[in-house]
Length: 324
Image 1 (cartoon, helix red, strand yellow):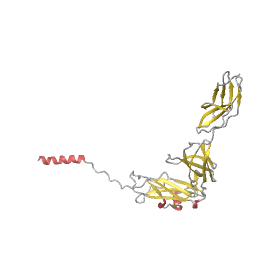
Image 2 (spheres, one colour):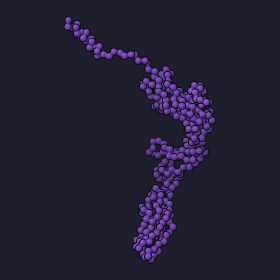
Image 3 (cartoon, rainbow, N blue to C red):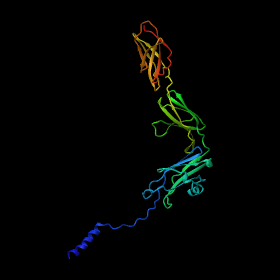
Image 4 (tube, rainbow, N blue to C red):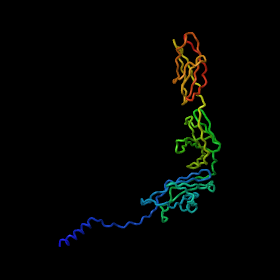
């Protein structure tokens, strides 16, 4: 009898320790999240577009495999923008032209047939059953005849700089540089002319450059194709400027010399000449006290500046002085 009495108790304990099943969940829709970083720019005779594929669905599940990508480009409709009207007139980009690296997608779209028109690009990503959450952010591109690629890029030594020159016609140019230690290219400046002085260099170190023409169109810049790359190692062949403002102050037992400080960043020292002979070097400050003088004797002084490469400037004009 004890055995039969324990069975209901055991069943009650089992039921108390087990949860009842909840309401059944609806099947996952597996719709990839919306693309939010679509970007596009005209470069030469192409429109370059890129974006990041979503890695999660709207339910927070991982997107499996490579989903279907629908990238479209079409003319901007007249008047108020209406998505259905744009979609009907747009062209779907062949997925075979898309380059996919992990989740980063890029493509080049021929721009010639859109010259003189404003076009809108958008992308949406479809799930396994064609479901999606709508179009990405819209990208507007003002398409015009391609900017000419800069040609004949050349480099030469300049004072404290590498001087770049090229041939092209454009409102503005971007200058890019890379060293052996750099992983990526860096834009180091812009120019309104076909030349640029890179003053952020170290002589004796090789630098690689390319140049790109750009033009402001609406809120964006159209870009040319990239120029050919060149590598150049600068050599310091340029002496500092002649020191200015040499002033002589005779004392009772010395003749004091002072002058203005040079502005060159590679300045190493000053040298002092008396009657055509060097009497001092290695001066860091623009001043010198000549104590090896005799009363009543007239002396002629000149100064030069020397840089870290050993380039010496011309001498200042001679200034005469004597102590009583």
